[in-house]
Length: 115
Image 1 (cartoon, rainbow, N blue to C red):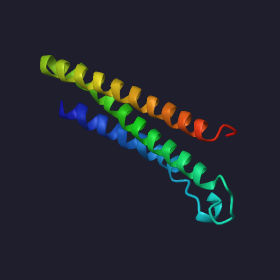
Image 2 (image 1 turned 30 degrees about the vertical axis):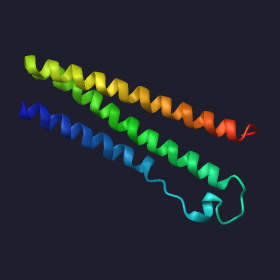
Image 3 (image 1 turned 45 degrees about the horizontal axis):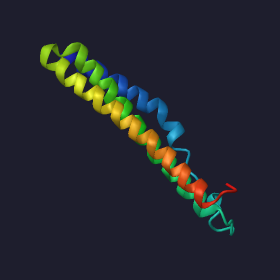
Image 4 (image 1 turned 90 degrees about the horizontal axis):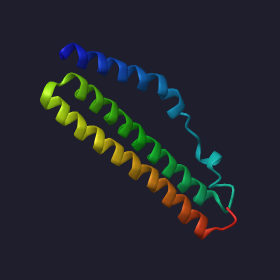
């Protein structure tokens, strides 16, 4: 079991390390349009932040789903029960995250029909 945990940890660490360059593409404030007087800059910033938060939460939920699958497969009888619970909770979390993205887009669309 310790070897499996170590392998899963190394795999997750590798995946996060490979994904890091796409996550860290930072922008300066002048590139956000806040200093240039763009009227939609604040709205675009909120949409961008909401997208990043939803993406990060989805990534965490996906890792939790994978961890639940590993627990289900390798944990014996107790692990199977715990794994099922983890998988169920991860799927519910992913559904909530997807619903939150839909709600944010619907609210933005309702507040600004031309967007």
